Length: 159
Image (cartoon, rainbow, N blue to C red):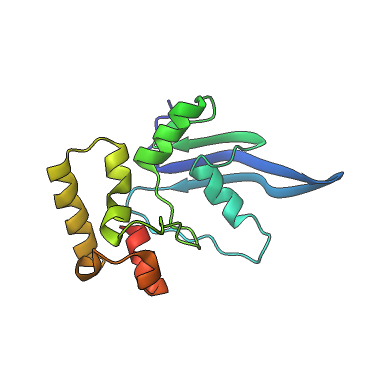
């Protein structure tokens, strides 16, 4: 275990892809540290590796070389089930397409991960309603994604 205060840390991380026989260095020998409570932004032109970096921090993609730490723990040697649990319990993504389940209401979409974690129903209700209130969606709990605006869908995804 890495002894650091960082939420996320990348040590000499590289990620290489192949397009046919052409080698593409999406990320080349990157060092990055993100502190707890810190607001960070990745900026750069299309194709500069921003999504690749986020996917590696979130354990969706593996580096070709180097080490990625999440909360001081290298996840590179974790098995598939442990990686899934890490993503479920410790990492959150809001994708550009929101990835809401179309047949579920805003409440049910916000509740979904808590249900997977076997959080008791009463606690789920309290937590879901609190977070929907926090993102301004408490009045829309019974609406499905196709009944919400893009911004509303994004707030449900954040919840």
